[in-house]
Length: 79
Image 1 (spheres, rainbow, N blue to C red):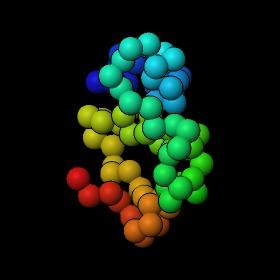
Image 2 (cartoon, one colour):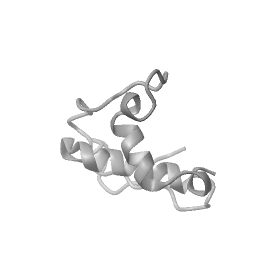
Image 3 (tube, rainbow, N blue to C red):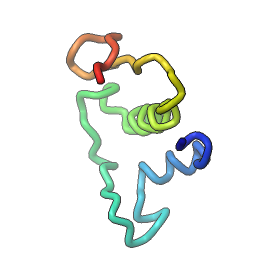
Image 4 (cartoon, helix red, strand yellow):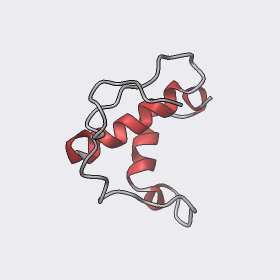
């Protein structure tokens, strides 16, 4: 559903700084300060991965792969 309604670039901006996109929103900001043990601590890659996941929901896509999550590189995430 998100992929039909939302612009992928807007999602990146929203995840990076929701207050800047929509002041007063209840969405918390996790960046800067994302986890160091996911995708090598690279926040831009983490945000892109979140966006890609949101856009894949409901598409029947294969399970996303773990990458640097500390629990088996390249393993599908169990739902």
